[in-house]
Length: 96
Ligand code: H2B
Image 1 (spheres, rainbow, N blue to C red):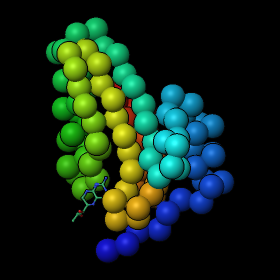
Image 2 (cartoon, rainbow, N blue to C red; image 1 turned 30 degrees about the vertical axis):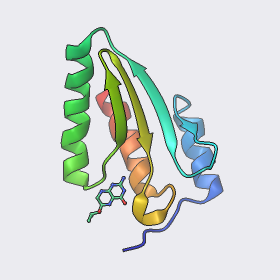
Image 3 (cartoon, helix red, strand yellow; image 1 turned 90 degrees about the horizontal axis):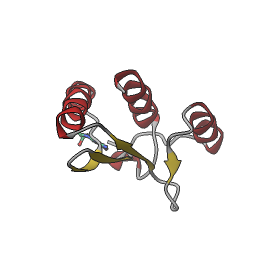
């Protein structure tokens, strides 16, 4: 089912509040890199995000190499950013 996309003003406000995230060149996703102390810390964080994602039924695209994590947030059902991505940015800020 299609989901409404965020307006440009909503995306701008989100990026102003959470400057660690950047807008992908095509404007359809947010990206953030994390570096943790070790793999245990990285995977522990991923586990907490995964539990949120499962509950929210909204899933990050991510890759992990040892203590590094790259997260891309987008809403496939919106072909761009939606309120679900904004909620996930907030949730991740609470977990980080
Ligand atoms: N995650 C993301 N990132 N985007 C989606 O559009 C999406 C999702 N859709 N997780 C959900 C699952 C959908 O496929 C299920 C059926 O609700």
